[in-house]
Structures are given as C-alpha cells and as structure tokens.
Amino acid sequence: MYRLIGLTILLTIAMAVTTPFAQAQQPSVSWAKRLDSGTGPDTVTNLQFYFHDTPSGSNPTAVQVVKPVATASDSNSFFGAVVMVDDPLTETSDAGSMLVGRAQGMYTFSSQNESAIIMSMSLGFTDGPYNGSSLSVMGKNMVMNPTRELPVLGGTGMFRMARGYAVLKTVTFNTTSGDAVVNYNVTVYTPATGENGQASSALSSSSSSPRMMMRGRWWMVGAAIAAAAFL
Image (cartoon, rainbow, N blue to C red):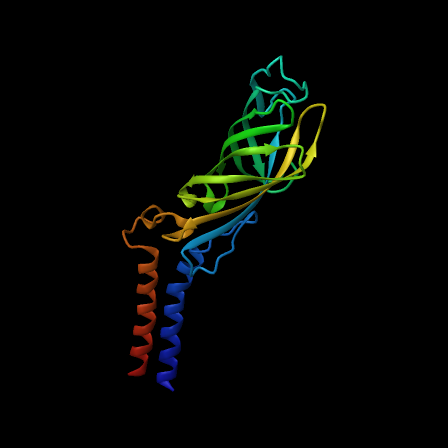
C-alpha cells in the first residue's frame, strides 16, 4: 500500500517537472500553429493574418516616393512607381482586430503592360511568443490575380534561417482610393535545432539545449520510478 502511494507521489512530481517544459515547446497564438510532428529535421509553422495597405486618408500606411514613368505604354500599369509601406498586420480582416505585427518595406510597379509589383518586405511580429521575430519576403505579386504566391527568403528570432512561401488572396480592394486588405497564408520551415528553429541559447539563459533539458527531465522520471520500486 505504502509502495503504491509512494509511486503515485513520485510520478506526480515528475510530471509536474516535465509538463511546463513540454508546454513551453509549443508556442500557440490564434493566428499561428505548428504543423509538424516534432520528430523531423524541420519545424513547420503556418501563419494566417491580414495585411492592410492604405494609401489614402490623412495617415496613410503606404506612401508613393517615386512617380510612375510618364511614357509607360499602359497608363494603368504605374510602371516605375515606388511605394514605401508600414502596413499593420491583424488577426482578422477587420482593421480594428488585434495587431499581430507590421509589414515594412517597399513595392515597385515593375511591368509596363500589366498590374504587377515586386514586393520586398519584412513582416515583423509583435504578438505572443513571436514578438520580435520576423520573416523576409520578396517576389513578383500579380495584384489583380485572385491568388498569388511570394517566397519567404529568411527570418529572425523564432524564424531564424526560415524558408517557405506565402499565399496571398485579396479580401477587399477600393479602385478609387487604392486601399486593400489581403489575406496572408504563410507556411514556414525552420531547422529544428530549437523551438521554431531558433538556437536554444537565444530561447533560454541556460547553455543546455532544449533536447538535453528534455532528456534530463525524463531521466528524473526514470529515477522516480526506480526509487519507488524500493519503497
């Protein structure tokens, strides 16, 4: 009887030690989730948020800094124009919903006869465990297409050494003001050397890696069970 009670107590203590660490290894927010099993070489994360590009009004988030070329063959192409942006990224398509980050960078109108832009931006996140992390995207965006894709070329923080892709879908577009809301569905791969690819030294003040820490905690579980066997 005492042996059973002792075993129960020791197992409870061991689980209390390991559970917080396991939870810490699974950062979770409403707009981001992990897709991998945790056993492969990469951490796979899916992010879904909304990009609000607002060139109109008294406080625009997108500002044209270079005018289009006057001799463009198609006056609707805006060829040569350069726009600097500091666009909010939100949880839903509602501009008043929770801010999850900002897109900062530029896009340039790159075609003389179609609505195409080259985007070069840093998507910097401010919410939850991703606060301070960023993704870098650059590529051709055919803005009038219902769906288009941009490559993810790198990242920082939780997304260090990231690679992946972003699928873009326009939610609303005002042809008069140019204001647009775009859904971003981003799939990111990061090396599984630490949580979401970040080096363990950046995640913790301890010099031990998360994998070593986890092994140490399971060693404690084994020791607890062995000790209970002698009660």
